[in-house]
Length: 250
Image 1 (cartoon, rainbow, N blue to C red):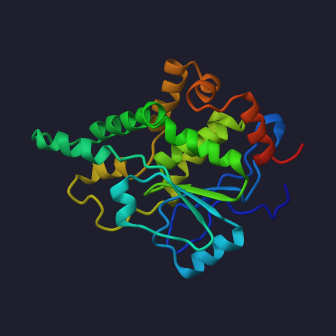
Image 2 (spheres, rainbow, N blue to C red):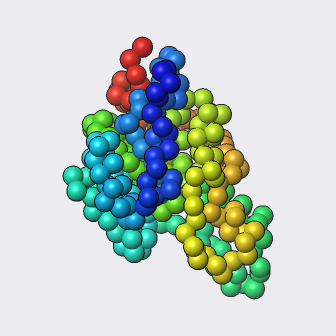
């Protein structure tokens, strides 16, 4: 590619983890198209300048994975952007509070376990929401952003599924997933009731989180192909259609 390749991370004032899934090499050596699929933290804080940048990028569809209380607390409407709520309720905070109510001080290792359980829940309990994301991507290749609150867990698993389906190697997918740690800025005062070592786990990403989900795909569902077809309804024809829409021509 030329040296003028688009930037992966977009410099928005009101979101810190907004980035493009383009440029990674997929099936047949064909790169993922730039400026088609974006991932982000929530969009409720976008400035007018941010909104203008999204309009310049042609973003016309937003998929919101936040739970109902989260999306109600920080609601948004962007002009010219179709809004698709696909609620995935956050479980980590509730589980952490339950543990604390038993009188136990939460440790970083507890938090890692909770995060891994959350990711296994994405694979199993939340599959219908990810199936719907693929259905939307197949409906049209309108530039789309999908997000949750921090753009790291629900969003991170969704991005991994998309990239893996397009043939991007797993190590590259993991590298993309971990970019959150360099980009995302935790809002001040969030979760100050927990020890900092626990917050560092909950507000960042680790390989062990995504690995927990991908191992479940492999071990419980027979691998990515079987998971796509049997669980998400993305059959061979749909996969070919996705590659046609989102990979550059050979």
